[in-house]
Amino acid sequence: MSENVTATVEDPELVERRRTQIVTAATQLFSEQGFFKTTIKDIAKKAGVSSGLVYLYVREKEDVLLLVLLQVVEAYAREIPRAMEGVTDPLERLVRAIESYCRVVDRHRAATVLAYRSTKSLSPERRLLIQSRETDTNDIIADAVVACMKAGVVRKLNVDVATYQIVLVAHGWALKSWYFKSRLTLDDYIADNLDILLTGILTPVGRKRWERLRQATAAAGEAEEVR
Image 1 (cartoon, helix red, strand yellow):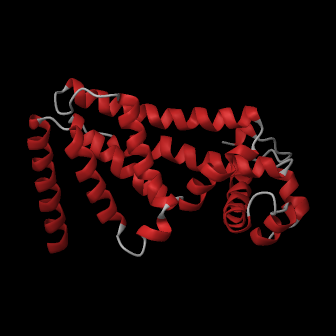
Image 2 (cartoon, one colour):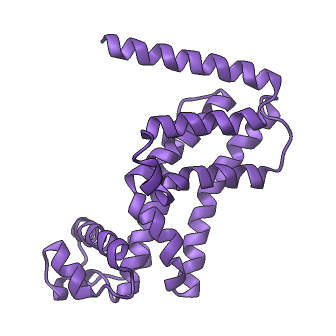
């Protein structure tokens, strides 16, 4: 993510470490008081560094916002494929993708909300960059849906609509966390949404495969509890 923001420090490891520190502080402040009301001085104080040090790693406050948003969209694109590695069954790959997406959002709830609320504060060029990175994630989901259609476990449908249904489910955990966190665990939220999503799109063959997957997952969970 650092190639999109200029730093005067040349040590890549130091840049990454300091920017992580800055992004963590900025994410909290942007969430609590908004992008426009937050200053570089506020971010520096929250991060436990001087304002001058912050300017060694970013040129302006918009750079910080870009880094915050890139962190979360790049986490989606990195961690969802990782959850699908080694899985060959198309339906299981789709399920893994949905589960992983929700879990990444859970780890980046504040930044996920900021992506909706504050992307408009970026320059047009940078907004397009964030949209492009989000599209990369959508393509991962869409490819998984298409593979399921080809395998006959998902009926023919509008892939774009199905993809955005999944995106909105994942993002909903962050956008409506004030409601869901007091009523559901993340595992319950994922399980209930998988049930609702898949019931509407699976073929009869897919439903049988989904039931076998659920049984296998339940059995694995029981075995883990015994250990």
